[in-house]
Image: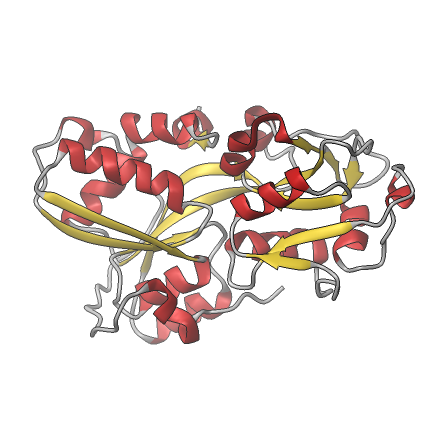
Length: 302
């Protein structure tokens, strides 16, 4: 599924365009925990993008600024598409993306002489959640596709009660929506009856409040929901055993909707931007990410 680039909606980030300083440098994933003992940082860095990542990156920024009182890290959401667009236009220093970069984004970067550096921040699983009253115990990808394309409209078709299904999805421009589209919908569009909501937390709140609802969210929002919603294990098809989005299943890739949460920069990061990424990748940042419900990259590397 093609993801939107987000250039037309950058104003939602509350940012203004400025000429981009291109750093034509080789980019690669890397891991560091050196900042935890580094000298105090001075300066400002702007971060924007994924609504999934915004809460936990904000927590990391607050801790980073406590340790570095002369540093200022400004974190805004807007969606993965808008964050990467802002990065490629030189509006922010770091773009947050809860999905892989699209071909269009990479082609645009190449056309501008930008070599993107993408750092994996944490692992995540897109969880399928239903109202606590639901009797459904597992779903497969084909059933999910039927629900979110509008072909399956009653819970009895999924082994549940005779009741209408209300499906909730993330709004266009969301990295979570793009990832779900790529892995579940394929080339099919969302059904016209599917409601699109701006954040994972909004989906959790609706699923918790309304019987008959189903939606998807990230591990952080799902953990924050506690027992207000029910997480449904997934299987690739009816012949496979269902898999719950546990840390081990996400780390191994056995969970069908596992993904990496990414921080992107134009060229190799430098200054406060590098220091902040190093902090997020280091022991203190990874502890914050795991506390929020995500699977840390330190664990993933073992």
